[in-house]
Length: 364
Image (cartoon, rainbow, N blue to C red; front, side, top):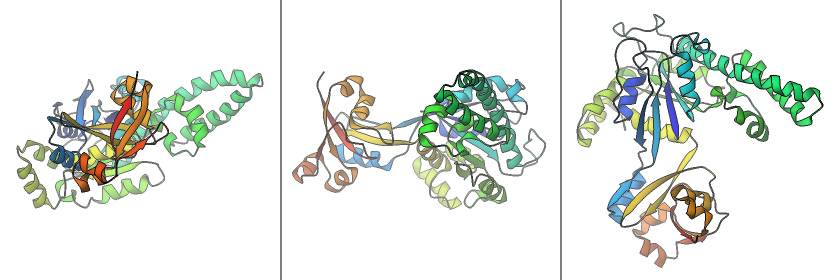
């Protein structure tokens, strides 16, 4: 799972990345500070894991993780190779989701690549470059499909209709994720193209300290602009997140947040949002040696979930012993859950639920 932080140069991407990850990216008050993408593996905060640790007292605890990539800033003309455009577009294509940082604060001491603060213009600049790149992909595909469609191939004729629609929408500056396709058509024809503007996106509004709790007019403008786009929105003050990141203890961080009227750090919200954006959920394994959170897509079957641990688990899957997190928390131990008759035995067709605590039986 990989989420890419993108945005125009100098909007706070690298500073945000530093707050999310132990891998410290360079950050400075000039464009193109980031050239090679910085990569950090970030633990997903989950109170359930902390509770299981307290109940089971294992030797070690492992969280679910998200890979965060800080990608070089984009400028106008990137789709034609301007600035670091080609490299940016190659890096972003490799991600599963996009965290699009928009500057939503005024500060004369921090330069803006276009000379003024306007998050809607900034969003449009990046959208257009990504749409141009997707249009290039669609047009190349259309060349091949048109030849097949002219021979009367029914599948090619159907695909041509969808590609023509895609081309029209992209030329009208619409992102692919906002186009209403049938699920079957999207899976069969659209997903294989791996279009950049089809990736799920979370717009991250970087606000000033006084706007950290309730946002500001810039945030409202972004919210209105994306109302018809299938996208998420989060606002946080990256400067505050940087200050929080410098504090050593949990108690110090909590006092700092309390003083600002915030319930939790914005970076924590962002990590959770990125996890949700990727359409992921968590199941747990719990034993004396290890309590661990495992990441799976929503809708995963029990054998597929077992395969995340080891491919042999999936190949030789027999059954899964399942406890809901709520039952484990309420009763306090696996033994008490069994005594209460709350442990279920599930087969190959079972769809794993978020928070399930599982033990797999298999034979290879």
